[in-house]
Amino acid sequence: MRTALFRSMAALLAAGGAALLPAAAVAAPTPSPGATPVNRAGTSFLTATPITAGQPVRVDASIGDHLYWSFTATAGQVHEINATVAFPKGRSGASTWTVDVFDGLRRRQACTAGAQTPTVDAKASTVALGCTLREVRPWAEPWSADPLPGTYVIRLSVIDLPEPDLGAPIDVDLLVGTVADRGASADDGELAAPLVPNTKAGTVLNAVPPVDAEADDESDSLTDWLPDLGSRWVWTGIGGALAAVAGVFGFALTRRPRRR
Figure (cartoon, rainbow, N blue to C red):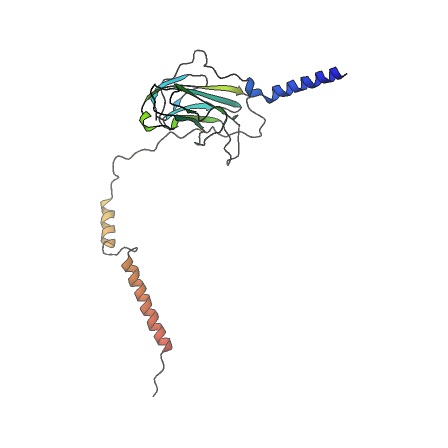
């Protein structure tokens, strides 16, 4: 009986361990078969290069550049971002790198796993960065920062390094993978529209709008001789006139009548 009991407990513990460690069993993302590699990156949120999950990225850049990519996520997905930066030989000191992820409202998203801000010494030839995002929710409260369906922007940059190393050439490899896709969850709600960054800039007016000459003449004839209402001497004069009126009125109230 004890043997049967021990076997039952062992089976329960094994099942519980498998349920508690789903992330450890998830394999790292791999490039999709036949995916076209991307060899460029944007320099800002507005110029972020669009990529898809499973599409490998390899670009040549310089130390100090801010590199931007964007990808689309739907409800129920969990994305993992892996990046590797290869350095040249002969760097002068240690450096700290970071990979940040922002949603369509430019809210910085938290990473649940991965080396998001690693530091490497001068002898290292490469540095590996990683970030596993939270599961995308179909909806959330307006005040929360939960990940929602829409476009996400990745920024890879260096945040601390010796100044002589600025501008040195580097090779960057990046891959975004979907490590889980649970589909629409049981949340009682749905986002009205995906959170997509506004990349449509306003128009620039190159020409000065024309001014109506008649209206300009009328306004000049009436207002040229009038002082500016905000000028100090106008309000000083008004205050002096009010003070004089108040003085005359007070004298009339307090003077003694003449005796005959």
